[in-house]
Length: 469
Ligand SMILES: Cc1cc2nc3c(=O)[nH]c(=O)nc-3n(C[C@H](O)[C@H](O)[C@H](O)COP(=O)(O)OP(=O)(O)OC[C@H]3O[C@@H](n4cnc5c(N)ncnc54)[C@H](O)[C@@H]3O)c2cc1C
Image 1 (cartoon, rainbow, N blue to C red):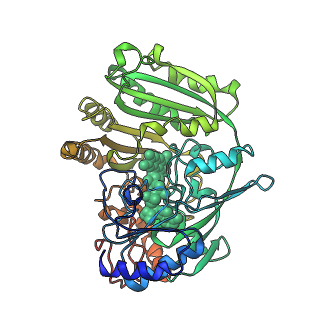
Image 2: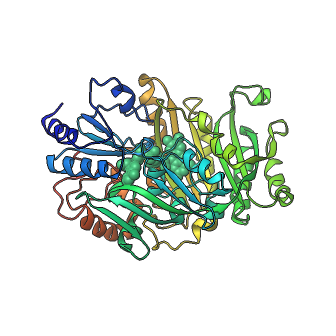
Image 3: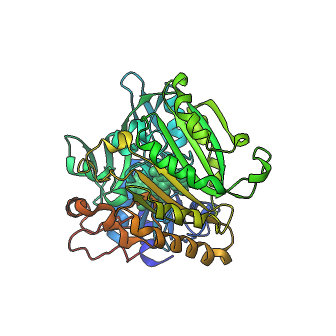
C-alpha cells in the first residue's frame, strides 16, 4: 500500500463504521471489480461507507493525505471512473435506502442505489421515476450525467425530475441544493456528473405508471434502409407516448428468432407505448409492418418487466468500449455508413444503438440544467462487447473507425455517460456554452479538483488536472 493511502487507512480505522477493504482482505477481489472488465484497477483501499458521516470522514482524510479518490455507486461507468490504481474508492453500495411519499409523489433515495432498488420501491406505490433501461446500473452516475430511458420522451431526463440533492463537498461539508438553496450547484449537478461532491441523497418527482405496451421485431439487412428512413421520418411526428429504439446487430441464435435471421445482421426494434392500449396499434402497427412477420410481438408488460428485460444482455465483467454522439437529422450518407458497418460487426455482442429523444426532454431549455442542448433528437451509441483481451484492438479500432466516418454529420455535443475513458478531450464539447458556468461552480465547491475521476471540468488554477489520475 502506498504511504498516503496507508496514512488514510490508519486515520479512517479509528472512526469508520462501514467496511475498509484493502489488498489481501478476503473480499478485495470482488470489491475492486467494476462492470467494465476492460478497467481492472487495484485501489489501495475501498471504503464501503455505512452512513453520511463515513463519507465525510473518507473525503476529509483522503483530501488531507492527498490520496487519489474515486467515488462508486453502481460501478457502471463505461469509462471506468469509479476505480483507480493505488488510491481510495469511496464505495456507496451499503447506502441503498429508498423512501416513497406516495401522496406527494416524491421519493428520496440514497447515493448507492441501483435503478432496480428505486423501481421496486416506487412501483409498490404505483409510481415511477424515469431512469435507464438496465436495472443493475447505478442511479447516482446515471442521474448526475442526465439519464435517458424508456420514459424520456414522456417524462424527460432523469435529471429533469430531480427536486434536490444532498452532497458531501470536497471540504467534507454536507450541502443541500435545490431551486432556492445553492441554485448554482443544483444547476450543475443536473448533467455535470461527479464533479462537485458525493451525492448522498436525491429527492425526485414520481409519476403514476405501472405497465406499458411493449412491441418488438427484427428487420433483415436488405430491408434495414427502408426501416431507418421510415423511423427517421415517423418519429419526427410521433406522440410523446411512443419511444422507438433500433439496434443494428446480429440476430440472436435462439428458437424465438426466425431461422433466416439467426446470427445474421438485423435491425432490432423495441417500441414502448405509454398511452392507452386502445391507441397503441395506430402507432405500433406501421413500425411492426417493417419487421419480419414471424419476429414480431406486442403485449402489455409491467413496468418492472420493462426495466429488467435487458439486464442479462449487459453482463458484468465483459470488455466494453463505446463512442457516442447526436444527429440533428439522419441523412442518407449517415444511413449508408450505418448499413455498411452492419455487415462488419466484429462480434455478436457489438451493436449500434439508435434512440430518438425529443418529447419532454426537448421541452427543457438548454440553459436550465448543465445537461444542456437537447435539440438533436437522434442519439447514437456505438457499443462493442467482447471477452478476450486479445480481441481489444479489433473491437476498439472498429468503433473508432466507424465513429470517424459518422462524425462529420453529427451535431457537436456528447452525452457524458456514454463516453469512454480516452475521451477527456470531448468533455468541453459536452458542455460548450455552459463551460464557463461549470468551471465557476467547480472552482467554488472543489477548488483543488479532489473529485477528478469523472468527465472532468477542472477548476480555475487547479494543481490537479484530469490527466493526473
Ligand atoms: C449496462 C449499462 C446500461 C446503461 N444504460 C443507460 C441508460 O439506459 N440510460 C443512461 O442514461 N445511461 C445508461 N448507462 C450509462 C450510465 O448512465 C453510466 O454508466 C453511469 O455512470 C452509471 O452510473 P453508476 O452509478 O453505475 O456509475 P459509477 O461507475 O459508480 O460512477 C460513475 C461516475 O459517477 C460518479 N458518481 C457515482 N456515484 C456518485 C455519487 N453518489 N455522487 C457523486 N458522484 C458519483 C463517479 O465518481 C463516476 O465519475 C448504462 C451503462 C451501463 C453499463
